[in-house]
Amino acid sequence: MGVLARARERLRAVDVVPSPNIWHWPEIYEVENRAQDVGGEIWRVLGETCDWAGRDVLDVGCGDGFHLPRFAATARSVLGVEPYEPLVRRARRRVAGLSTVEVRSGSAQRLPVPDASVDLVHARTAYFFGPGCQPGLREADRVLRPGGMMVIVDLDATVPPYGEWLRADLPAYHPAEIDAFFERAGFACQRVRTTWRFADRESLAAVLRIEFSARVAARARAEVTGLSFPVGYRVLTRRKPAGLLVG
Image 1 (cartoon, helix red, strand yellow):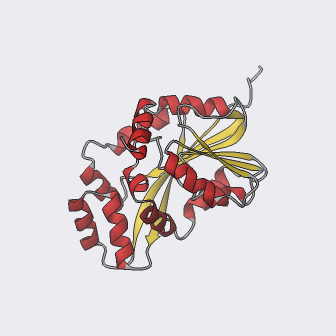
Image 2: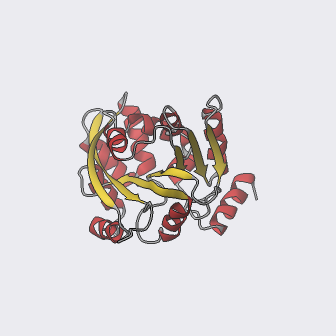
Image 3: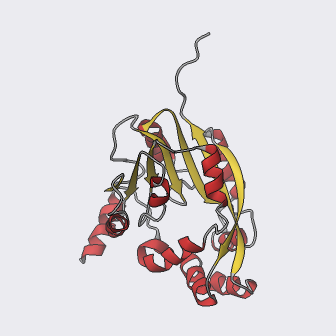
């Protein structure tokens, strides 16, 4: 068994769900990251909802660390946690010159930090997809300080055209059920419309190929005539109580 195969076996043993897009094609995923939200709408909403300036940030499922420098610009400290060792190494190379940033191996269910040690737990299109993610939600509550915030950024499958492509590949995915799950868990939801824009058609096609089946990727290429398309997100937030109310 090769090194990567052994790594995948270890991850399966701790219930880590593979992310084939970034695991198999990190260079194309970098293109995707740079194309996403070109207007900065998600960052605007995050800044208004959960300002991290001077605070300690934990990015769960940080991948190869694409978002870590953005947090590090104003945060006191930033920790990226990622279960897939090749991405851990890539993330460490990315942030090598940033003294306030660290990357550790770990999973959402077993975060490698003490209780009540961070102010913001951020997860973007990683692990927290609905029913089944309760262990990660409990773990986020464990590591948050009182008054700290958990924020989950995920795709909104109700917004065309991306949401239609997603549901074509995942017919069992029901957005209303996911929304109801997070509402019951105490999250507020803000829906954000963004634009993905690519430098050329080749880059656009490459990203569609790693995100969708061959059939749906071909459909998407045919439906997008230019270099950009709208994509909807949900920004889910939940604040940890700061203390007991005394009557």
